[in-house]
Amino acid sequence: MSAKNAKFSNNTLKIIEELNNGVKQASEEIKEKATKYEKALQELQKIDESKLTKEQQQVLKVFKGELDKGEIKKIDLNDLYILDQGTRHATTKKILVKQNGAESTGALTNDELINMSEAIKNGSVLLESFERLKNGFRYSYEWENDGVKLRLVVDDLNDGNKIFDFHRNFKDFRDARPQPSTSKDNGTQPITLTEPNPTPKPLNSQEDLLKTSENLNETTQEATKLSPLEQAEAEKLAKLQREQEQSEQEFLKAKEQETKRKDALKRKLEHERD
Image 1 (cartoon, rainbow, N blue to C red):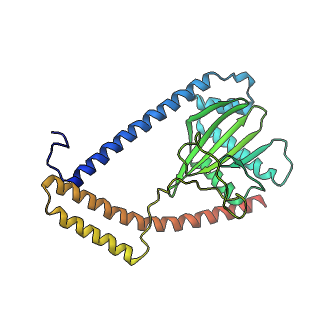
Image 2: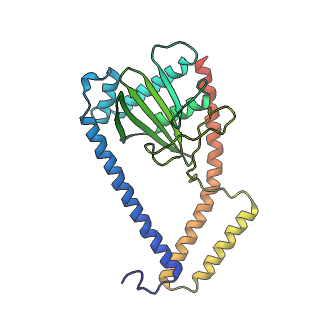
Image 3: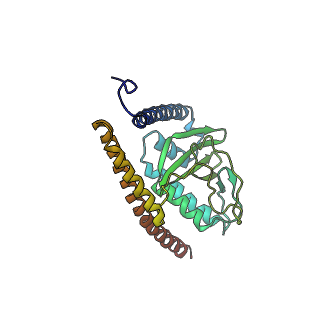
């Protein structure tokens, strides 16, 4: 018996429809990712390795599965260090930093350095992000931390130079467009695009907690009027809502710990530079 022919309430039918839509969306996302993966493999086969620098050849071997991904991370972390040193001393290797596609002005800030290095160390090197450029190739790292998606796009150029392009919270680096900076220091902080932050809103007030409690009570009362199947669905939703409330409280504690950790890392980096 189909969901439409079964004797379910409108609310239950809506839940079933949302679940079906979620499965459909996930299937489309998997298909899209597979297409990008296949395209990346085709791009790899077109590259003439004899024209690449030694570091580029190592990067290419990582994407071909011939070297561990840790090798590419070591190269990029070292170049990130050169980038930081280049803001203080002259360097033969030219490395630029961008924010959402726009060239960043001024020296590399501590926040930029920390965010970019964390994206490299903790992030995944995305094979489907690989693409050829006229003067090199491009790939990216992706890392989600506290509900904030960080992506570092790397342009590895044939002349030995490199561009790090740092992004926050956007759906696809291929479709990203630069956004004007609203910060007073002209873009030293990563720009947040208009994609909604997936982090759940914490319950900070007694009023918020009271409203949540009232909603749970109403859900429980409505469940007593439902069929056994509908009641099971309602109880499942109520349980999920309670778990979300608990996770929101845990999120506040975790966020506080993460802030302390970043402050400690920032002090460590400053100490190592001196």
